[in-house]
Length: 79
Image (tube, rainbow, N blue to C red; front, side, top):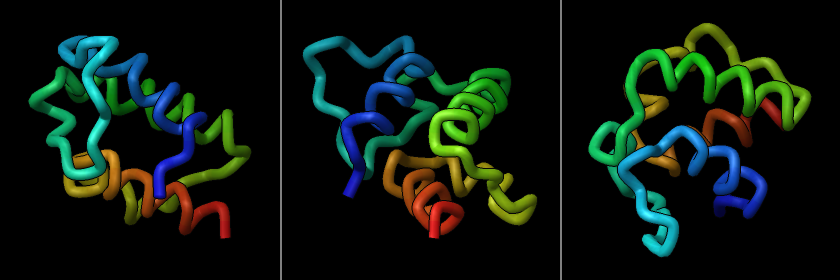
């Protein structure tokens, strides 16, 4: 389950997601504005906020496909 801190970080990198629009776990992040530069910036923000380092194997477009796929990578790095 996504936490509110993660959602807050993620929303900063999704320019096409309206403020009142819910962030659904299966939402395609590219469709709401996540591009390759934003992926790098999002990764840095998430790693800093959670005090983690994502494994290089997690650095795929599949990881950044939806909030749920990214959260699974973050949650695994926290464990």
